[in-house]
Amino acid sequence: MPEPLSGITVIEMTVAIQGPAAALYLRDMGAEVIKVEPPLGDPSRYMRGRQNELPENSMAPQHVAVNRGKRSICLDIKTDLGSRALFALLDNADVFLTNFRAAALTQMGLGYEQLKEKYPQLIYASVNGFGPKGPDASKAMFDGAACARGGLTYHTGNPDREPAMPGAIIIDTAGAMQLALGVMTAICARERHGVSQQVQTSALGATLWLQQWELTHVAMTNAELTRDGNHHSNIGGIYGVYETKDGDWITFAQVMTQEAWDAMCIFAETWELAIHPSFQTPGQRLGDGISEEATLEVREILKTAFASKTTDEWLKFLYSEPEIVWEKARSWQEVLVDEQNIANDYLTTVNLPNVGKTKTVGNLVALSETPGSVKGNPPELGEANNPLLAELGFNPSELAEIEMTATQQREETIAELKAIADAAAQ
Image 1 (tube, one colour):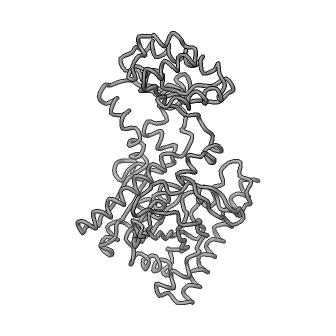
Image 2 (cartoon, rainbow, N blue to C red):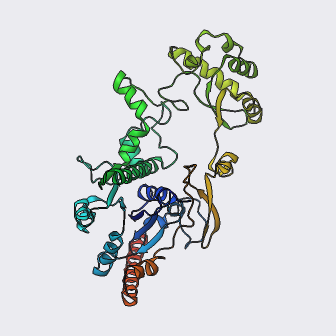
């Protein structure tokens, strides 16, 4: 059975998460993704993170997470031969996907207008930090910077403390989703209308996309919404995270029927809420039409109620009430063994040198007739150089020169970095 993007070839020049994760989705949907890396490789190969006791020469988790099933070409494109190899790859490509800075791409002859003239069939997909226009179009970006610029950091955390960063790299990943969606849209437009084009999005744009409701609410009402700790800044009533007697946390979101509300009040021994006039409808329980005082009152009552019973007691009751919307706050260790994630194939396994088998996130989009699939392990740096470039007509001596040049450049860069580190240590 064909996969949705079978026959589509993507040339990827990216680093970190935002670009690679977009190409990963295309790969899971059947596209061939060729990741072109500099001599030292995508820096994410070396992003070890914290509490990582794996062997020093093992692939870094960040790289593993967003590069499954791709093929790696290692080139020094500053050389004539490396540049010629890249352009030979583009000869047969459908998509060029990158998160390099626009000025650097233009300097390498890889700007949109430059490639459009040479490859009129090519879809040119680029993503950056703060959008392709404006005074900060070329400003460097990390996920936390985009969170701050887009308002997410300011509105996360407790009201009486400093703003808090989100607990995961969500904006890079959201930007990748937007870029993948843009590429899919451009492929559809090319198939239907015969037009190839440039696709652009950004981490800042993704931050706004994730906050459409909240931003629109502020724009329409001029509200001064602030951080609200374990509660949402724009949702009143019961909605929030509450601690149990033994130190776990449960997100208590909604009670959709009167019968379930009564059952909740009986179990929690919150008799006053059963007859409280402010909480008798689902809308009221989410703050609709009630006062700020009523919101604070119900939250204090629920805080005491949740703290009076153990997690197991709460879970037994909540699982018995399908009209209550809730979830236990799970750690990443718990998420990796969650039966719901396993049942839906949301997790997959890759096999890594020096590490062995390990779990990572898999293909999350299910199609009934032309499903995509997980394509395997992340590639070793340059593993596809010889087979791919030989197919493009490069002879053995040219392949050897490409390998020698990349190796030499890699060794020189490592030596420079070591010298800097040694100097800093003195």
